[in-house]
Length: 198
Image 1 (cartoon, rainbow, N blue to C red):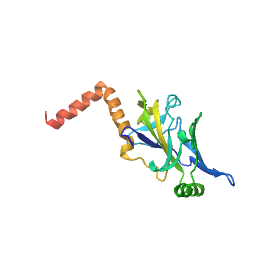
Image 2: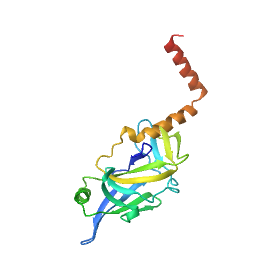
Image 3: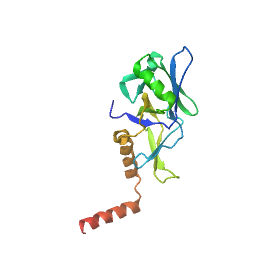
Image 4: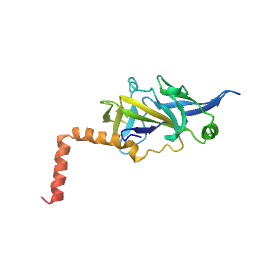
């Protein structure tokens, strides 16, 4: 997976498993929801703007287990993964293949052992912006332009790995450097001078 791909996990209980008596097994849920604040992602929180998917390439998205390309569940280009943007976010429906790992996953979802999903994405130009979150005081990153959706994944652990937020942290540092106020710059300079013993 490209180093520029970011991965985010949606909230608990976002997935449902269902089937008719003799029909295919289907997993449905929201890969992402608009306007919902994430938990602390290592010094910042994140929210997805309602217009973030307006220009997104979703022509060849895969549904995976734990972002593992060897455990494919569906694909938009094959018609086995359907994506729909609505007022809540990005809804998906995956018609599961007749494989052992898909059958096992379906059963784990049905009994509630697994309940999270995740998505991989690439940001477009000017794809994010930062402000200060009124509730937490932390920087709030707004995802405004997702250029490509790479995958939606059913995940066992909704943990964020350090590599998942590297791009966001880099963008946060750039934001903070541009927005240092003169008073803060003066204090940082004074601290540097004290450290140097000047």
